[in-house]
Image (cartoon, rainbow, N blue to C red; front, side, top):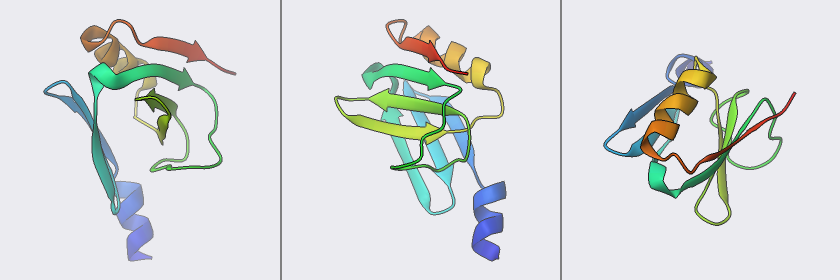
Length: 93
């Protein structure tokens, strides 16, 4: 029960020093925003690393991707595009 509460209330995302940092429960890492090549908004990812249950698929490096769920998807997308304008944005319904 404690782990579930930690994941639910302990998830955060931060854009700082050219990096997208995330922490959710025991998962944490950072991604260089310059390595992000694509953001897929509005699609669910059913396999792979998912420190969230809804949100954005961030594709970075050559084959890496992670699923995140910020409080405001569009605000995060704007912040990332400001730092790396070459990021491709795909909207799915």
